[in-house]
Image (cartoon, rainbow, N blue to C red):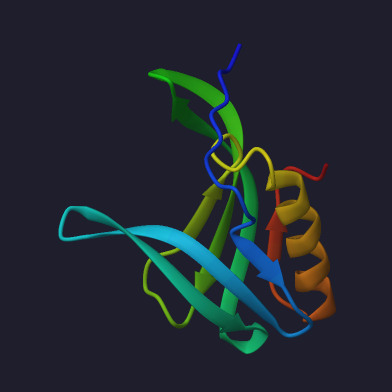
Amino acid sequence: MIRRIMYMRKPRIEFFNEKLLLNFDTMIGGRKIKRDITVFHKEIQSITIEYCNERANFKDYQSERIIIRTKKISSPIIYYGIKEFNWYDNYKAGIRKFAIDNNISLTDKVLT
């Protein structure tokens, strides 16, 4: 059983017709920094939804993740299923719709 701790109180991805507002954590100089960026559909290179192993409460669990690669940032932006459990299903549905509507390369290995 997974103990779920409230990670975020609001969604970290906001969807609009031609852009995404992304809130994510990145490591800079060994420190975790929160960043907010606006990414237009033309700046997104690819989106992948896949299974992964995620570590939570000192145990490894089967989970899912969303990987967004953009032209703005060299490293991919990753959202994990367990860490984002309150919003993750909304993220998947929104990302799928956004990718189809804006003709973005989507690799969906989960299909649920």
